[in-house]
Image (cartoon, rainbow, N blue to C red; front, side, top):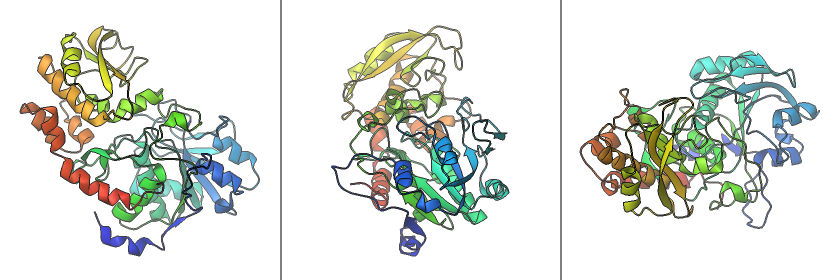
Length: 406
């Protein structure tokens, strides 16, 4: 990480509105503050917005519809991420190029585009300012934060301004947890070395990306929230929960996701095709021994129930599998990454059919080969989680420089 660049970026990284620090203020999202300020940061600009179904007001109007109706904003384009602007595509898909029937605006697809290819999309759209407003869930491998990164890089290449409208980290921003990505394992589920559970908001990540990772910083403006406290979960915000993606239906899903998404890298179902994705885990041949082994660890804040289910799609489609359901009873004590590692360790011990995906996807998710090789060698939960503490401490020190909220 290039800490010496910070002073050089002081003139390139600005805040469209200052980040407030009063604890008694009501929560307002970045969009709400932008609108209350009369969209002054966008006045006279041809504006395009990167968003999806989570870009809503607290009365669940989509911000594209709101901005399109407002004569103070010149909204001319929409850019959709993975799953698409309207959120209809499953994991690994998007909606392609279209025209939004509600507004008539052109909708451009950003998914799997980066660098010059994405810069060309921004150029073709004719915008001079790119706005980002998508609800993140706090995990390194959730692709929206890398859409943010790619769009920042592309905006710089295309000579565009970049504005980030902030929303809460739904699982709090108390602290970063988990392994830090090693650069040789970079992919669209982790472009740069940040922790698996980063504990940051989108605007904070944008500041980090600009200050540490982008070769040339983009002219960045952030519109922070008011009234958000780092120890608050999303359901304390007063904001409506809109599923950020088809398999992120509830806040409960987001709470466990940064740990149990690791099962995407195995032959165990991560619960896709059920009503409780990432809370239900299982495979054919697994029985109650897994839940018993996991409960024996007495992990803080969580219990495990022996569970059976039949996914309607994805792994084991239409077949009954056995496994566990995660029940978090103390969110403040719960550590999703440690829990995810413990479940991998115990699954391998109690089920002889356990296997990693042949493409080593687990290495992309964890950010290195270390978790896979240590578990294969028989390491326990404490040994695996202890192996990344030094790099995590280094990331936490860097992260602190970019936080907007006390």
